Amino acid sequence: MGFLRKNLRLKLFCAFLAICLWGYVKYTQTPLAGPLMELNMALPLQAINLSASVIPLGLPKTVMVTIRGGPEVIKGVKPVHLKAAVDFKDKNIGTYSLPVEIKSPPGVEIVDKEPDSISVTLESSESRFLDVTILTRGRPASGYAVGPFKSQRLKALGTDSLFKKVRSVVAEVDVTAADSDIVQKVTPAVLDADGNQVRELSLFPGVLRVTVPIRSELESRVLPISPNISGTPRQGYQMKSVTLNPATATVIISGKTEIPPSSLSTEVFNIEGADRPLSREVQVLKPKDVSIVQGKSVRIMIQITPVKP
Image (cartoon, rainbow, N blue to C red; front, side, top):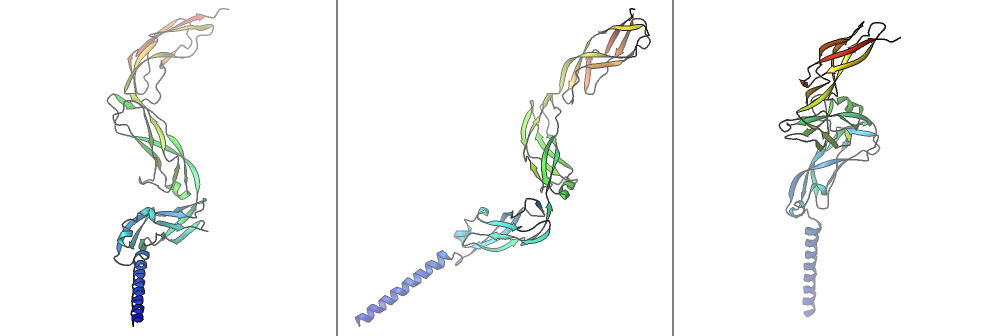
């Protein structure tokens, strides 16, 4: 009788251990058991096994997924823990409908994904050089202006159809309240005819170092005057000397002037057939974006003498 009781207790104890073991496996090794939680998140979409000679067109940047699992698992899941990809193995130029593959960690079930598959076109890649137009935003400090600066060039990698969309490449620099040259790193943008960004093109470098000159809005300078003389003296005579009074002019140059002048020219002084000294007052020509303060006219005196035998 005692033996039977001991045997029964042993069986009950073994059954209890089996139930405990089953519960442990059920609730720790199979996290989807019990209460469940769902979560929506955006995942970056990767292109894997893609040939370097082609570029995919129509490939979305992200996909939306719905995941499900136990609350203790789902609450700790981040986008970095999952991977969304499209496999282009053995795919060359052409259009394909390919599934979006999602890899998730243990205990996480993929309930839904949007899109489930994508239609993508592979085109041959090519590179070209594009000019970048530097745009400015805002106004410099009072009394200052944005000086002239040249556009830059960069290398772009894309396809023929993408390059046909390109209307401009721009990079913007903020010059608000600036009173000295600005050196700034900016990200250029490729725009189509409607002003939309052509994001499939890859730019090298992707970030430009741009220098925007900030100049005093008005700058005073003293420039030499160069006489504009045409014609030749009478046969047997020669032009011996040229004197100007004044020889210089004071000017004010706008900071926006692309190429500031280094000298000023005069109206034409014709000496054709002259056989004696000439003296004439002529106007000094005003270049674009330049104001002449002093020296708007000049007297040119030309000494003409006979040629010695």
